[in-house]
Structures are given as structure tokens and as C-alpha cells.
Image (cartoon, rainbow, N blue to C red; front, side, top):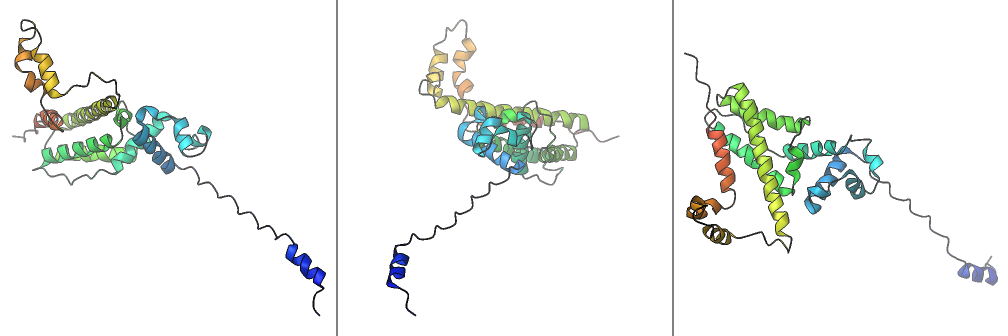
Length: 243
């Protein structure tokens, strides 16, 4: 039996049934990995000075209290950051014939990792390494030096000196790059300008600075880094074999 025309008309004018609201997407759980990712993003885009627990929480769309279920404090984030960078380092199998070359390569890898994230090497300074990846790198460097015949105590302190120099070098480069972005950074000079200033100093007070102005201001790329690293590594004397 055909439907009554009034019923058909009512059906045509009826409001369509509301679609069920899509469920709100579930937030990704906060994890140590996500905290580390967010912290690295903060440093990469804003610099290490901008890194705070509150800023990391904002990157994750949550509040600081959510992070404290996974970290203890800001130093804990520093430990995670350096551990993440260390996880990307490739450590060679120690070779007694190439130990100097190998330790230089590891230091250069650490330097390059630090330079990817402005100022992040500050996180490595005064740190007692507890992250397993950081300890893996220390273990690898120690194995290389021991394979080269370096005494254990000398090797242990050499790792500390090398790590300190690499972190300090990377920090200085990051600071210079940051200051160069300042339009009022009139103190940033070219080598030629520095040479001109040194050569204009009073001869009686600065005879050597005037004479060697070019040498004092020379160096491109990582030449000075390589020079200082060589001073440290090449002066490590292998232990003399027992008589």
C-alpha cells in the first residue's frame, strides 16, 4: 500500500539524523622517547637556552606534571639528550695500529653531533654519565686507548680531557653563531679586520701580537679543533713493554 502523500512530504522535510560525533583522537602517551624528541626539537629550533621542562611539556601538548612521571628534573633531560646523540655514534673495533686515528674520528663524530643542536654540549659538561649510550661511548673510547697501549689511568683522564675539549669547542662555535645573528653584533670581525686592529696596536706594548697578527687570526673550518686534538692525542705515550 502506497504511503500517504502527507507522510512522504513529512519524510522529505524531516531533518537528517545527526551523524554520531567522531570520537576525539586519543592523545599519544608521554614516553621518555617523546620527551627526548621534543627536547631535541626545542634545542634545534630555539637553542639550548630555551630548554626547560615547561617548554618541553608545551611541545608535547601537556603540562610539566606529566613529565615528572618519567623524568626527575632538567638534568635528567640533559642526560637523555646526550644519550640520544651518543646512540648515533659509530664506534670502531679497536685497532692497535690505528688507535690515534680512531680516537680522533670518535671525537669528530661527537663534535658534529653537538654542532647540530646549538649549545647542547652544555648538557654534557659537569655530567656524571649514567645513560647506557653515553657509557657505551666512554667504553669504546677507553677500549681504543687501551688497545693503543695507553696506561689505564692515563686513558681514563685522557677521555675526560678530550670530552671536555670537544664540548667546549662546540659550545664556543654555537655561541659565536648565535651572536652573529644579532644585528648589533658589531664586535664580530673578519680576519682582515682583526689583523688590521692587531697591527695598529702600540709596538712597544704588543710587539709579538703586531708581528704575528696573521698567525693569531688564522684557521678555517675545524683546523684549530684538529690542532688541539692532535696536541692531546699525540702526546699520549703507549706503555713501554716489560723488559
